[in-house]
Length: 67
Image (cartoon, rainbow, N blue to C red; front, top):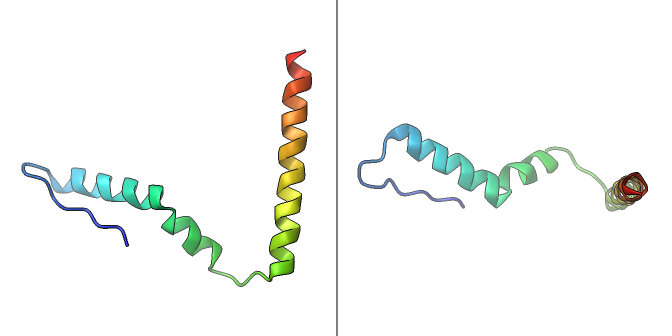
């Protein structure tokens, strides 16, 4: 759970900005979005493999571009 305490002389807007940053750093919102729909273990593995292949191709493309 993300908790933010108001500092002396801090405005409500500054407090909300710090809270949003803390939430984004904790990764809670991305986890909530991911859990919004059920994804089976097999589907998760398939997506992870697909993502890894894309990442590998992108790195290879960048290496070839440097030459």
